[in-house]
Image (tube, rainbow, N blue to C red; front, top):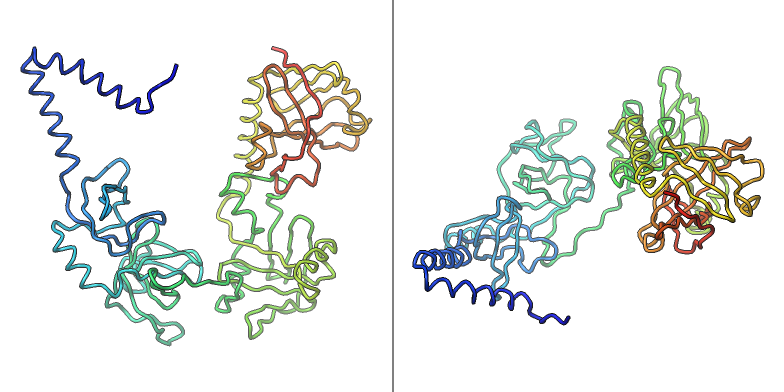
Amino acid sequence: MLMPRNFKTVFVTSWQARYLGKLYKSPVLTFLFFAMVSMLFFSCSAKEGWGLILWPQDDSELNFGTIAAVHFKSSITKTWAVAVPGSKAKEEVDLWRLELYKTKKKAMEALDSNKENVDLMALALRDGLVMRSKPENTADQVYRLRLDQDVKLLHKVEGAAVETGGKELEGDWYLAIAEDGTRGYIFSNQLALYHAQNEKRPKIDKSSVDSSVGLSALFDNVWRPDYFNSMVESGIMDLSAYQARYGIFTDPQRQIIRVERPGFSKIYRYESINQLADGTFEIIPGAASFVFTKAGSLLFTPSQSEVPQEALKKIREAEGLDAKLSYEFVLHDKDVISVINAEERKRLAKLADFLTWGDRYESELYGILIITRSGRFTWISYGTLSPYVIPEDAGEVGSISMDLYLSEDSYKLWDGAFSLVFDGPKRPKISFVYKLRGEQLILGLVPKEAVSMAVVNAMNIEDLASFHIMK
C-alpha cells in the first residue's frame, strides 16, 4: 500500500475533521480546544529573554557574541531553545553556553563592554592545570584541565600574585568556563590564548619534555603502560596486556628500577640518576633514560640493544635510522585487580547471552561442540579441522572466553568472536569469529595478524565451519 508523502499532515487533518465535528455539539469542548491551541501558540512564541552566546557548539549556526531570542528552557535536557537570527530555525543550546538578559538592550550593553574577550579562548600547555574557586593559588580546585584542552576565557579579574621559587610569574587571572560548563578562575601563565574567530588554534607537542617535574615523581607513583587508560576508557580490554605486573616499579632504598611491558622486561640496578639540562634523566650505569612530558606521561628509552629488534627495525624503517624505541607510561587511578575482575564478569555475561541461542552445536563434517555457562567446552570429532586448524594433540575439552572484540566494520559481517584454549599438552589457543544465521552457527578462523589489542579486523575472514544449533 502506498502511503502519502506527507502522512503526518494527512493524519492530523483527519483527526481535526473528526474532532471539530464534535466541537459544535459541545460548548465546553470548544472552549477547551481553543484554550489548548492558545497555550501552545503562546508557549512557542513567548520569550524567556535575550541570550548572549559565550561558547557556541561546534556545529552551531550561532557564533561567539551572537545575541538571539531565547524562547524556553528545558529542565530535562538542560538546554535553552534559541532562535537563529535571520531564519525561522531554533537551536538547543546548553544552559551554560549563554548568558540570559531580560532585554536585547541589556545583552547589547554586555557585549559592548567585553568585546575584546568575546571569542577569547585558551588551551592548557600542561596536564593538570587547575581552575579555582577564587583568583588565588590557594583557593579550592573546581576543575583540572588536560594538556591541550580548551577553556573559554570570559574576562580578566584582579587576583593574587602567583609565585614559584620566590619569583612572581607573568600572567593574568581570568574568569573561565570549562568544556562541561564549570566556572572558575585560572591563571594564564600556562595557557596559550587565541581569538577563535580570526586565529588558528595553536598546536601543542604533547611529547615535549616538562623539565619542571622532579625525580620524586618517579618514586612517588606507580607508572603503568600508556594503553591502560585507553583500555579502561573504551571498555575494550586485552587482559593479556592489562596485568598488575606491568609498569615501572621502584625501590629507592635498594636502588632498583624494574620496567615491565609485554615484550620487554628489565631490572636496573643504578648507582645514580642524573638530570640533564634538557630535562632528561639518565640511569647510571647503562644507556637507559627517561623524561616526563607535558602530557603528564613518562617516556622511558632503554638501551636499543635491549629492545625487541624486530620492533626497532619497524620504527627505523618508518622514522629513519636514528629513531629509538621508547615506551610510554602513565598514571593510572584504577585498581588493576578490580578492573580485571569486572572484565571477567562481563565476559561471562557475554557468554551467557551467546548461549541463549543454544549450548550444543552439531555438524556432519566438524563434529559436536558443547559449551557450558561456566566457560568450558567439549569438541568431539572435529574431523577435517585437524591438524591445520586444531593440533592433533589438542584434546577434546578446554575453556572458552569471550575475550575478543570486532572492529567497527567487522560487525557488518560477523556477530562476535571468542577464543578456545584446549587442555592438551601445549594448551593451544584458537580464536574464531562467529555469526548466527537462523538455526546455524557459522565460524571463521581468526589469524594472529588480524588481532591488535583484543580487536579483530575480520573483513577478510571467510566462513570455515557451519553447525546446526540444537535446542
